[in-house]
Length: 128
Image 1 (spheres, rainbow, N blue to C red):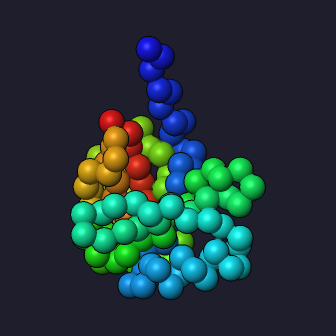
Image 2 (tube, rainbow, N blue to C red):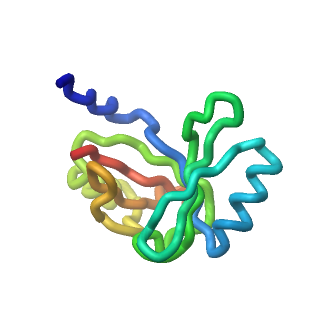
């Protein structure tokens, strides 16, 4: 069986949006962007994978601000692949940034949400 190739450090791996009313926002983007949605069981509620209308490829997520996403800002969040989450978080703080959320496990890896010195927010993701 072929091993799955790790994403390149520095590349963008994912986009999602965490909001109080994910169903309402899901429906908004279905109408505005033409996306279709697939539910993702979160153990008592559903978040949503948003899919391109023609190919059906999952392009983003829309999540409820609860469970592991409680406390995340309501904005489109991009996920940047890093080689070492621990080293990247140390560099974040050392260079004027702030760790807002995490680190915590996510899928096959770990994530943390940071704020840069200008106030912009991003997630850092290290695969397992």
